[in-house]
Image (cartoon, rainbow, N blue to C red; front, side, top):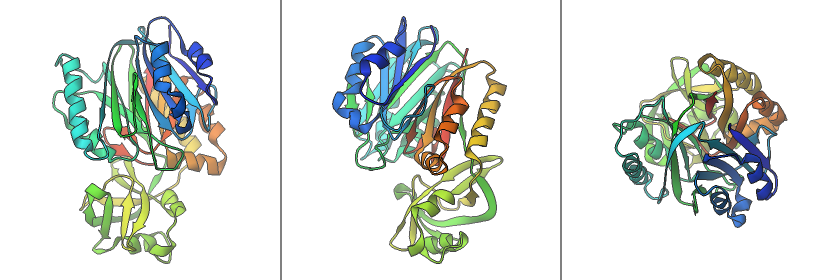
Length: 369
């Protein structure tokens, strides 16, 4: 038995299921285009693997050993050789109160785990949630929960850049206002991390007025945030800022050698900047510049091999902005080829999760032998 993966660009569910089938499947993780909703993939996977924990999310393009796909379904199965136990929760209401939903999920998982002490070397959590909610509130609750020490990695569901409806599913249930966490007690080693190919510049500034609950920054260094940012990147004014500017010149919180990207989404009332995740007041951020995304992906794999020499598989959660960059550079096949020797799947997200909520980032879990 092993980690098995498959991809289809159409609803060939029978062929896909046949490809990932193996004895004693313990978990199935899958990502699908929003247009596949009508086929009810959650029910199809659960029918095929009734004894396995099955979780999924809608995507905007997927990754797989067999090649990247723009639309369709990618899936992975893990057997009892890799996973000893599984525990799943799906809760709804994340658009209204993501923090409350997170707390309900934590409580349910603790009950299902029998209130045991869990160790991050043995327990892996996969988190998937509605890409249109404030996902940072979900991840923050899990990260700071006492006695619930596990690696939690994942991504926010997507919907072909429409920002209308995103889906997550667990077993036979699917929701457009939900969050899912799959906890697996692993039998094999694994390694999680987040990866950023953007590089800090010497230009930095302090956020002096913000509304984190709405992801809006109103002032930078005591000045109109939109005007300050436009001037800092060489644009004549806030009305000239475009999504391309935001994508190519995001800002980042720099701690040592680690960068946490904060991507702008739009100008608010000609004054504020709305972001894809929150920034607190008094935070110093740097303007970032693009690095080489393919060279960085190769280095990512090299770095993982230092911690996990025998990598057999991986799950990738790649930001939509990174996907659009790869499209612009015509390097989607090159990115996929970096990982093609592994049994891997992934999807392009509306946010990436690893201890916190990221943007313009790759979060990933790698599985050892």
